[in-house]
Length: 120
Image (cartoon, rainbow, N blue to C red; front, side, top):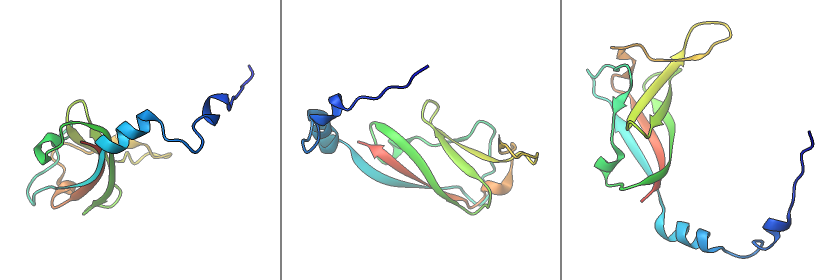
């Protein structure tokens, strides 16, 4: 199998702004959303229910988690279909894989998770 590339379709955009770029720049905004879990709110299998519409967003194209604080070794992911924050940690095996946090885990108590959201 051969891999081929072509620059022809891109040369027309060099130094020019397309109509798509105009639309995206005029409509989309970048937000940081901070979600803080309560002191006695344990994790629930399937994720923590958080709707981005509750903070005034009508639509979004990207939700990027960063900086989960309060627990070491936990990775976050936002499930846009179900509007839930899913949290993962090591499964303890070698090589380590990510597994969803256990139901009723207290690792989320007082945890703050921040998201970079691109939307409107």
